[in-house]
Image (cartoon, rainbow, N blue to C red; front, side, top):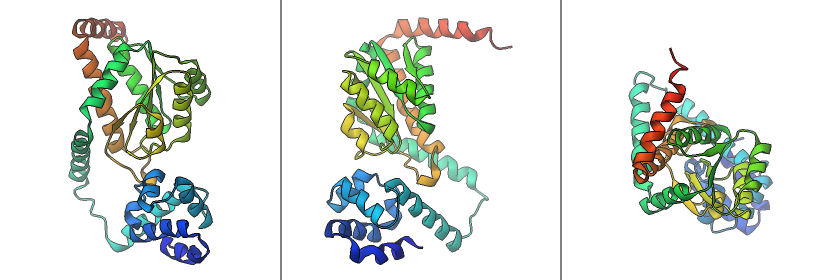
Length: 274
């Protein structure tokens, strides 16, 4: 069933608050798949719980299930309405990624970036949290910091993450990475770390999302992805851009130490290559 038809079918049975959500979706269907649950709630002037009730009442398990259906409908319409031109996909992808970097630069709050760099520089311990594609970014961030002599950690296993989160304390930094800002596991780990006394930094594409209510510093990225585009390279590029800026900022604060550690870490692995 088409999303608009589904909403119209259930509309009379919705409460007035839920009908406000329905009206917003009907009027902006193509944009809704890029909204976080917090953004849609603000747009409709209702609470997040109202958005969740709306999704369940029209037959979805939750907000992410609702967004996935929106993306599937949009994909079907695209296939029906236009033939894809694959002749210049190389330039299309190149220009998309360049635009993502430009957008990330425009979203960058340099004061928050410098504060994050200072916290990491002074931290006793840094733990990166992320799952899925963002978990891979977390592992890459750990690798980048290690090469300049910064002890940090990132784990893929959720049980290990949970134990690490509750083991953190004052003077530590918990660094969460989530495109949507609505990833339950990541937000749960950050909350555990914060309750243990750690400072919290977050990278996300959504200024209004659950992760921003937990983080002390929020660094925004571009490259928003549809539910069907999970793990998109564009979103990852914007995350790695912020990680690169942080590493470069740390290097500028400790020029001699960074140079020495780059040489030591390079020599440590040079024998591992032919």
